[in-house]
Image 1 (spheres, helix red, strand yellow):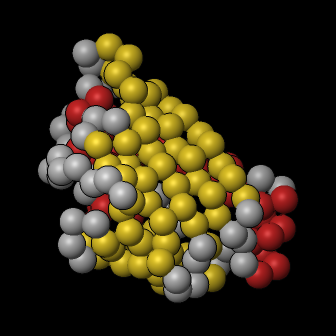
Image 2: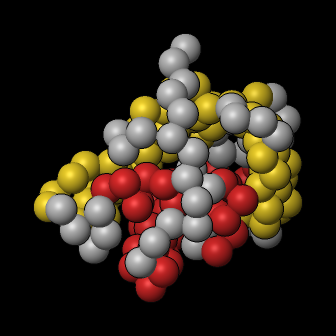
Length: 151
């Protein structure tokens, strides 16, 4: 199992960063490996990703969600085994820190080699920079779901 932990500070209020992160269908705008996400209900979505040139699909379940604090998920079978959490921390009234922790099982030769050489870490770091640019350029979230999920 590989683990990635990356953090970035963004110049938007914590509620703006959190609200955007709950808009899963917008992830292809800033996550390079995501082809599409289809929201099925409040706690389930379907992902299509491309990792190391290999396309994969899986369903994910939101296992914990607390507004302006955290969103946690896990995959449900399919071609990808992963779990993760994104936490949101208020720095000031107009800035926040976003931390991503992702645990995943590399599949196949390309993914395993990429994990050994830190390609996945670099990808997540780059995608967080994309998120920063996206949310700061927008200035506002494209929506937001502020419901609670506890398991």
